[in-house]
Image (cartoon, rainbow, N blue to C red; front, side):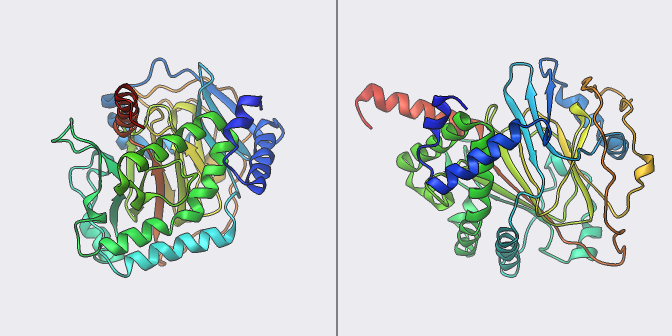
Length: 363
């Protein structure tokens, strides 16, 4: 870590810096971390990505599951993904789960029928399995309104314009511990980019005070969050997310065998409450794959062979067999995915606003 990286960490406490340095050393250690490089210059089109949706199970079956930490860089050494198993302390997992359950006891989730990431979902089946309001997607976000592209970003209406606004705000604040923990992993993996995220959010809070509804600490790198509850996710890229910043991803509950699949590098990353993932969700196509049981003998490291969706030649890594007993098919498994992210257009607005104020001589 060079001096400029150390300078980026000056807003952390001594104990936080110590954890970040330990994580940095671990991520640099080839004995504990696998490093992959992928050329994203020939990125697949959105149309090709969507055409792969019917083949998601085959894609997942032909991806490898790593047995240690993973770091993925692009052809220009820009960080695309960090995977850190067994990173979340149990008290943080418990506080996050409690916040989700408390919210779902007071509000009902909804599921949009036109979200390309969750098309063709059988909502009647989800209703029978989980009950009304227990499945769907909730955004607590700061974003640009589609019909008002020249206006400043706004906080999602659920946080201000509904009778449950207080419940949503309490939920957002309940993510403090998990966001801070994921943020420190980000600081270890890419200190300068992490600090840039923190500074963008700080500026946004200064320019638009309503964004403080989503702030959980002074070192918060993510402006927005989304809860995906008990809903399958199709292969996709999050086309509105930041082009350069990483999103933080964590699962709560879920099936014993559940992965975030990254087809371009032929990897599937085990997601459970203890594992942490940081990913460029705009660049890397991805989806969540779940199974009640898994036959490790069927796993291999062949090329995916899926029509249209290309993969990169990443070499061969050892595959670790998956542990644990098969899930009880009669038991209803609640599956929550939390993702913390920044919108590119909000990031652009903050940069333009800073330039405008500097030109006018305002802070």
